[in-house]
Image 1 (tube, rainbow, N blue to C red):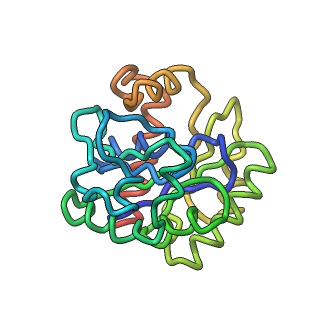
Image 2: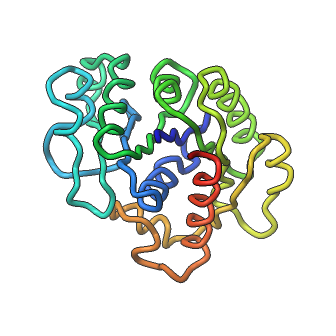
Amino acid sequence: MILAVAGGKGGVGKSTVALELGAALDAVVVDADLSMADLSARRGPDLHDVLADRADPLEAVCEDGPVRLLPCGRTLAGARAGDVTRLVSAVEAVEDAYESVVIDCPAGMAADAGMPLLAADASVLVTTPREFALADALRTRELARELDAGLAAATLNRTGENPPIEEVRRALGAPVVAIPDDERVRRAHRHGAPVATIAPETRPADRFAVLAEEVGRSVP
């Protein structure tokens, strides 16, 4: 299974959702945001090296953290040196070795955002309760449909009281899981760990588990 975590707007929490799903689904998380990587790992080969044909995809997978991760470099020179069209074969190689892959997609609608969706079997959209974020998510949903990355679920992230779950579900046509705004989620992400490892008996941990269950029901 290859699952793309996408959302048209930057800053909605895609990387956090990808990390949480990677942990819950026992998957390798691929940080495919080539110019604004957000998931850290130890020194060594990364996705920039893989796309520039300087490293094998499996060589770049880091297994010594809380979540297995194929990280991405953080330099513009590295981003420019790679061939984004190599991403599909790289992710497929990781899937062959590990069975499950979660791709943290870049924001926007450019080629570097479409390539992870092209590689994916299904997608999870991340949005927030703000109207402009939902509009961007709708555009990303259409791109995912065009690239056969069917929508498994949507995440309404960083919500307060009474999030508009039903309105978002009707708009996107998929199950919606609301994730409450919680400092413990941000703290876990800063340490590259799922929130369940630092605050297991909390609502955010429970909601991410429910999201993983929705994905499991939608993607064999």
